[in-house]
Length: 113
Length: 118
Image (cartoon, rainbow over all chains, first blue to last red; front, side):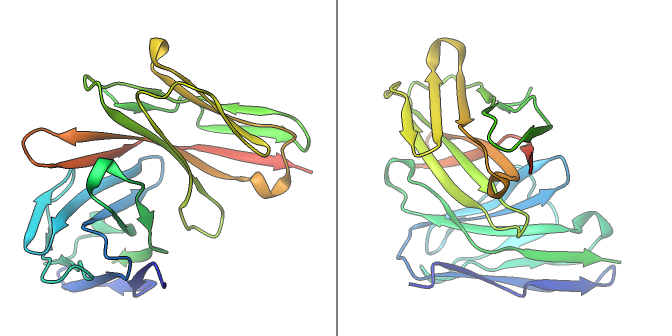
């Protein structure tokens, strides 16, 4: 199993540009989520999904969209990038039942100029 | 108010010393889960332990041990005989069910950066 994969590893954007961060898992996990990590802030939940076709907002959803058309994929879209979205983004997945352990992808480092 | 508090922002120890990382959490749920993750300098997040709210037994795994005390809402992590490879940021996290949603949410503390000096 590849586990949780994320692409790209690093991206530079200009303010106002849009992009999609890709996340995929091959463990048949129902639950997938996106976090952002900023210095001194820990990880904060952006959006999550409990299965294909079902998504919901986390703590910091503004400026981000998600969709879940398949069990395996959970892309994160930045509609109009802002410097405040400079961060490291982590995708995670787990089985849904009994709040199982979330396993994280390697992260995407995003710089918005 | 923070749901997960890791009061120690940074800790430095000399190799072979023991070190305890503190974690205090806040929840109204009776069923919840606590986690510790390690983030080495390479940046990935490595799962260390998951503990449910009904299991207060201390756990030991090699040089790592965890002390869960519901009475003080704490889930502390001790590394015995620290090694340079233990240098990392350690995160404590709380998982709670989201009412009516059939789902749950994981809330992280801000992390403790541990530096083990040779």
